[in-house]
Length: 488
Image 1 (cartoon, helix red, strand yellow):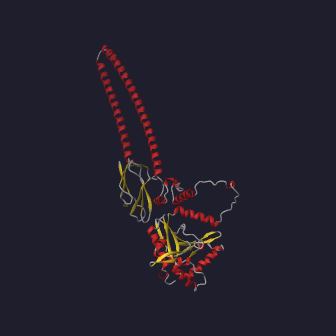
Image 2 (image 1 turned 90 degrees about the vertical axis):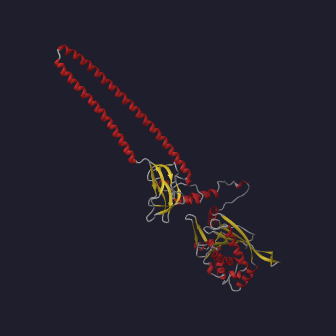
Image 3 (image 1 turned 30 degrees about the horizontal axis):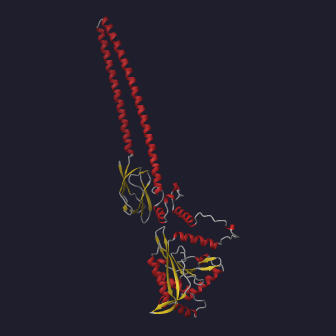
C-alpha cells in the first residue's frame, strides 16, 4: 500500500526549512532510516530519513522548495506490518476452518455408519437363522468394502499431503531464489548510488563543501561512524588531491651523470613558502590585471615629505597609504572568502603586508591600521620591520593579520610580474621598476616617469571589472596625489 512520508520536526523551534538536496529518485527501493532529502534552516542543516522501507512511488518536493513540518515529501509503496500480520492471521483461520470442516465430515460419516449398523443389528434379530447367515455374509462384504474404501482414503490423503509438501518446498525454493535476486539488485543499486554520491553518508553542509571544492564525494573516505563523511574528511581529500596535482609522480634523473652536484636541505622559510604558494595556487583562481601610473607629480611630493622625515620616504610607503584608502572604497579587496559557510568576511580594519626580500627567503611583515597613519609613520615602520626581517628577528605575530599585500621588485628591476595571492587574502599589488617614457600631456609629448603595476586577485570574490576599477584608482591617485593624500 502507498504511504505518505512527511516532514518531521527538524529541530526545536524550527517549523520550516529549505530543501537543499533530493537524495532518492522515483522507482528507488529504499531501506528504513535511509536519508531521502536534505533540508537547511537558520538553526540546523539535516538529512531526513525514511521511517520505513519500500519503493519510491512519487516525490512531492524539489530542490529550493520551502517546506513546513507535516508537508508530504514523497509517496512510498510499502506493505504495512499490521496488514502482513492480518493476512497471515486470515490464512491461519482459513486453514483452521478447512481442518474443522474435514473433521466434522468424518464424524458425520462415522455416526451414519454406526446408526446403520444398529439398524442392521435390530433387523437381524427378527429374521431367521438363514436370513441371519445371509445378513452376516452381507455385513462381511460391506465391512470389507468399507475397509477397502478407508484404505483408499488414507492412501489418497497421503498422496495429497506429499504433493502439498512438494509444492511448499518448491515455493520455498522460488522465494529463496527471488530473495537472492532482490539482494543482488539491491547491492548493485547501492553501489550505483554510492558511485553517483546518492547513498553516501554525509550531511548537506559536507556535500556542499565537496561540490564547491570540485570533489566527487563518493571517493571520499569517511572517518565517522559507519563511514560517515565529515568536513575534515573532505578537506583532507582535497589536500591530497592538490598535492597530487601540484606534485605529479615524476622522478628526478641522476644529475651526477653529467657533472658534479651538491645537495642542501631547504630552509624552514623556503619550505613554508613552497607549501603556502602551492596551496594558494591550487585553491585560488587567479586573475591578473596590469596598468601604468605616471608618478612624476608624486615624486615631487615625496621630496617635500623627505625634508620632514628622518627615514627615507619610498614609493612603497606612498602605495601603502593609497592602498589603505582604496581598500576603504573597495571593501571586497579588504575581505576573505569562507567557502565552507558561503560567506565573505569584510574586515573593518586595514592591515597591509609588505614583502621583504631576505637571504633566507621572502618574509611579509604587517603594518597595522595603515589608514590611521601618515606616510612618514608608515615609512618609519616599514624600515624598522624590514631591518628586523633581514636580521632574522621578526616574530611570527608581526607577520600575521594582513588584509592586503604589496610586493615591490622595482629596486631589483623587471617590467612586470604576476605575484601569487597571499592566502587568506584576496588580492596583492605588484610593483616593478619605473622608467621614463614619452607621454602626451595636453597634446604635447613629454618625458614622464611611468610605474608598471600588477594586480593579482581571487576571482571567487572579485570580478574583472572590479579589478580594473581598483587598479585604475591606484594609478590615478599616484598621478593626482593631493586629493588622495589629504591629511598625510
